Image (cartoon, rainbow, N blue to C red; front, side, top):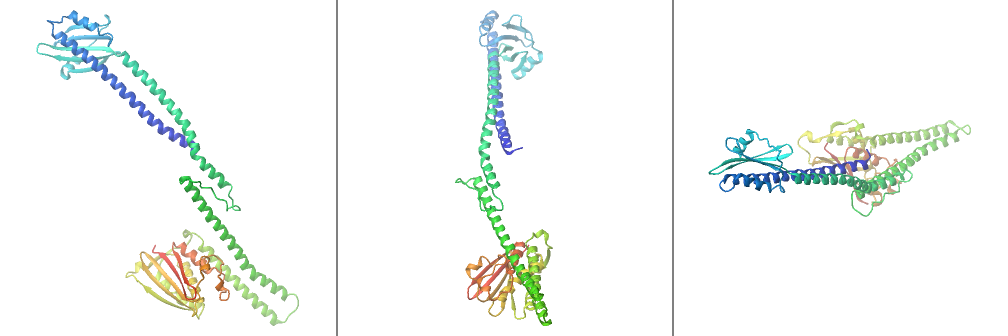
Length: 458
């Protein structure tokens, strides 16, 4: 069901319920009021008749009948009967001489117990009232048809029914108009989004001036488009840089082989070409492995092999691994706020990937340190692991800090010292983020640089 029809249906259902309750309540209480009114009038008539009959020395029966005949305007088709304590009829009157009122002994007995009983006789409503005085015990039954009251109630019912139907019809019209205005921003946002493509990610949705839900939705979509645009831009730069990094050794290999094959050469020359080609092939192999690790670290956590390991043991393997890679690199370890129990050092994640991330940061720290030394400090606190990796060296310029985690980015200070691909820090950042951690960098140019890796104790 379309949203517009759903809104109309729910809005109409709500008004239907409210109007139904209101109209039904009005009709119910009006009917109760009419019944109470006719009951009170019949009771008063019965009391009056009983009092007149109890004073037989003043009012004889003919006079009472004459008095009852004068009340035909207020009560239509009135019938009055009086009974003594033996259930014998001592008085009877009816506006219509042929009209008879059938009163059972059970009704008379109930009136004597409860003083008043209301019942119906055909289209008439009746009250049996027991009057007790010092010289008389009379039960008077007075019945009449509340013609005016029923007409008024029927007229009220018609008015309420007409009002109810009109209210529902008006609600549907208002709901149709209201839902159209309510969903108009959604239609506008949908039309704007349809115009946005991968080639046109710069277009944004107008948010409007009012701070409402549609403004929030437009802002959220614009933020999403900003992230998509940034992701597409990063992907474009990544593909461009990766293609460049791969094409450079391929071009070198192709050029060297073409020159070597142009004419016969000495064996020493061929060996020199083959050594150069082998170096380029190793370079390409290393780049390919790095790209594979980068792609693996870009996946979701559900696709990784997760197990439990001690974070301190992982850190303690770093010095030997870095020294094996470059014998001149030196790494020192420090442990602060070491927990008393082994369970507080356990971490859930991919040990191989996390070791690769920390190793890349440590190698970077040693590479750009003036003495090729890096200092690692492990702290455990507040349900998290904090690993600080610092060095003494040229530092990182402020202009480069915001770009160092971008693939293939190389700062100006790396031109003479780096033979890498610019993927080490981006790979470390992806791996740490995959483990729901974070990396912070603080650098003082010409003095020192500190990378802080914070991992939650999952």
